[in-house]
Image 1 (cartoon, rainbow, N blue to C red):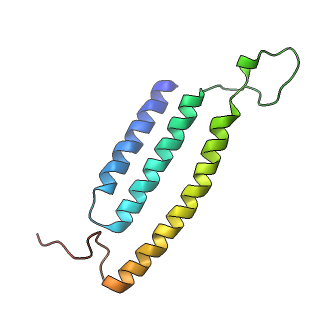
Image 2 (image 1 turned 90 degrees about the horizontal axis):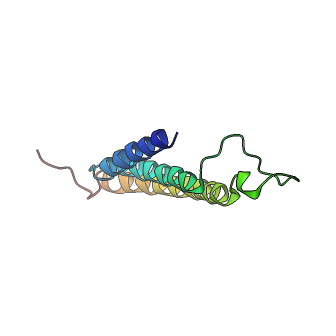
Length: 112
């Protein structure tokens, strides 16, 4: 399970970095979103992967058997903030496209 999670985080991080380096602003926004999802998965991985672990304290169960709620709370907060910043970036993208007439990061078309 840890190997699959590590590969998923690596692929998402690599794809996000590759998209951030692209010349168009929409690709940069999608790359930032992929990077934030990869960081969220990393936080889950650091918190420890436990399947079918109870989240509520009960008598007779060791504390080490419970899932840690702190990474879950951090990721939930990061998801909400990520949606808000993505929406803000998209509004700025639309305004920039309307003002400059292009969606390139530097504001001009590249000659090839």
